[in-house]
Image (cartoon, rainbow, N blue to C red; front, side, top):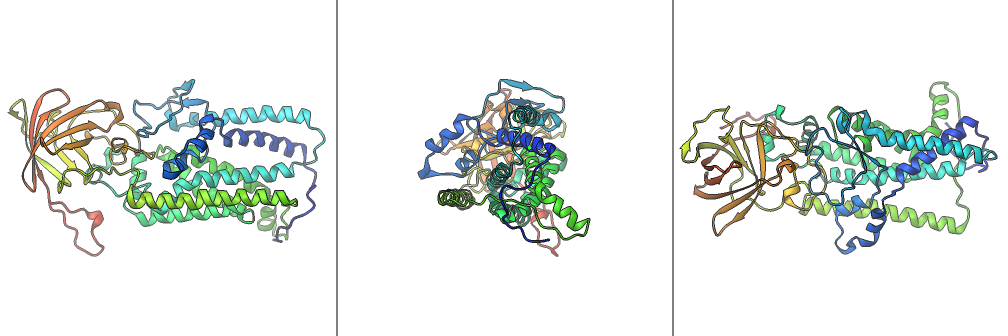
Length: 480
């Protein structure tokens, strides 16, 4: 295949179909990619630049066209914690498939419909243009830069593995079948950080390829191949980023489209071909300077600054892992030695709807326990970049099977724990316990349950080894 060269910019004459198709996608992509929410532009002037955080980078990376909200199938579903500034929608639909089925693409369909209408009007107005090479070049650049800008958050949160952090004690002790599908998909990355890093570096290659026009086709092809797989996985596992990932298939195809005829002739037809690619020349001095300044800003902010902030987040404040320390030297899984309700001891039964069966304490301030009772599951994977520990729900979201998770605050003076349910469906549920620690392995709790009953329970820490952390070749030992 011959090298691409800059040619007479007037270019060839497009067919009527090519012009109409381009007009449609031109309007479609402008609607999809240019933010229409005034708050997006306000953030560039109201952001605290002296204390910039990765949360700010995400909010400055653009927003998608969305005028209709596809409601979740359950209360508390698709929870992203305490993320501020959630947009309110005038139109909400409630399809049976929920927020992950075909109806989730309703806003895409609307944008494409507007694109067709816009193309029809454009066709009536413009009957003289032979082609749209200039607009094609800049639209391809817009799509490419939009893809790399929106990808940077996911990229650097994998390079510095915080998107899927280490598994918590509660997750290690939750039966496989008690996780929703999307959570299963995420936690598989949590114990293979090398693969998580590999995925991040692969996405970084895509970002670099999309950044340079000479490698843009490679970046588009890799977007389709890699992030297209992520789109399929998110559909299979009811993931929360299926729309974002699917956009990389569409955007990648658009950027790659003008290369495909030559690729087909080369590979299938086995003929020597030259790429019929026309680049905008940027011949005027001011055009060159605008291009240099724009590309320099994109590289500095969305590559350099984003990478630095994600590294700082990884080192000091992983956004999915709570930071407030829990009870000192209490991390582990506990059996419930005895459990009393209103002074009467309840014997162990796996079918008891009041008696706690197993309790876990993290090194941060999260306590979880299992009870044979039903509740509404919230969220899928605990997405989002939350500020408060109560909203950091990676270790709790998407978990059923009777396991409940509470954030707690410690009153060292009165030896009291104030627990607040991390499930957003039950966010107003607060429990208060007084605690005693007879020895290093036992904790005595006295307080009230969610029904107002007096309860007392003695917890005893188990000595447990986890197979996932055993070295290869070693004998696997589990000590209850």
